[in-house]
Image (tube, rainbow, N blue to C red; front, side, top):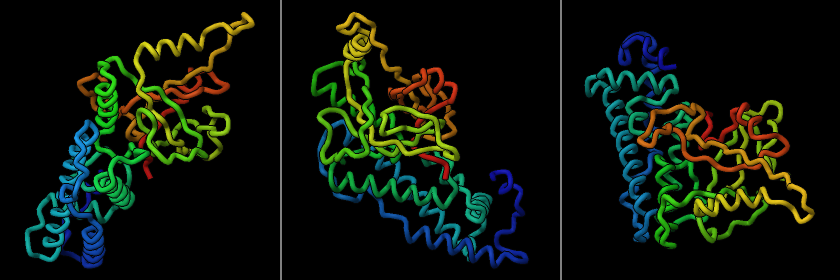
Length: 314
């Protein structure tokens, strides 16, 4: 799509047939501007001072920056189409992107990673802003939409920091234990420790809620929605003890066959690749969660490239 857009003739304001294109783009500009929410920083906050509210303030800054860029560029494009300012190369590129349903580079440069086409990208943005707005106005939600964030890794670090300070445990001694909640669970309050997260999609397999394990995808399924996941901070020592406990002998003296737990990577997008961060991991990588591998061993799901995504492409 980027290649197609780049070779379009540079004639956004003149030429045969342009009036129809101009009308279409102007209509999109007006629709987007009318739906753009106001700056999040102008909303009254709950004034709680902890690691999560620090993270929230950083997310607010990122969203406000993106909303400001979108609003200004749309209004400038409208002025250019109407002949009030010069149609620069950047504005013409934006014009063609709107025409061909691609996210303008001037937006994507200050946005989060996404492979969605323009229409669903914009709707997704509105949903993200709505979630952040609700958090600002109503306090921490019972279940966090992890895919709403610019920097979900920062959210997870903040959760560990809160647990670290509360229990006076060094943060580098903590990790997350995973529990996939039953879809029938009535989650009416926050968990006793850690956080509930939602909005993940499994690619390469599916989650069988009845059996509580990974199963092969059904025919025609590219991805499936995961139930809510409970991320519980535990110490590295406790995690090692849990692993040893799974391997212990039963009372009968026979060796219990432990459940195979697949270390399932979580990525922001289906592209999976990203630039290397200071930790040596891809910036697209969020964390790994432990999932029951079911009747297959973990190597089977590794070969299937099973992963969880915070968003899908459509």
